[in-house]
Image (cartoon, rainbow, N blue to C red; front, side, top):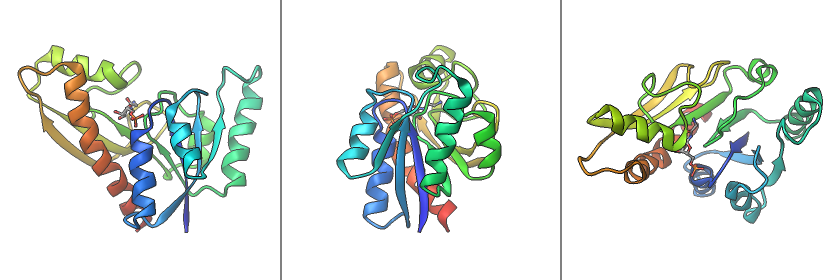
Length: 192
Ligand code: GAR
């Protein structure tokens, strides 16, 4: 069975959607590890609750960048990871990991890429920018990962309406709902 490592930075609702999809059989894969740059990420708790191995790995906690990279690569190798899913991960993966797993890393982004991608465009910043621009539609994108932020080819994209009275929070909630549909769908397509 295909083995997945999921990277999270915060709440981990996208990770939860994958945990649920793997357990109800709609995704034929197993989540082997959850990795976060943030020791307090609730996503790590969601993972450990269902017995998934969790790791707090960050370039900040390792004094030496090489040690960080070695630790990351060891976790992925020890678990024989086939696919890396960035599910609300706010950091750039080291380029060594991107080249090692090229074509086997996907990311979910809360906007209609290529709009509202790139450095600094994550989480609520994206929704604020969409509202500020007055766009009538936003959405979510699952794409392959390369060395640049939010750049690789698009696998699935779905749009939602921006309502006139939206706040960044209400828009984020509407987008997050479709993220929970398209991320498991993209992983399922990858598995097939
Ligand atoms: C999601 O909206 C995800 O698309 C976004 O962070 C949120 C994480 O939510 N990711 C990015 O902005 C990455 N560029 P979650 O922790 O509940 O899955």
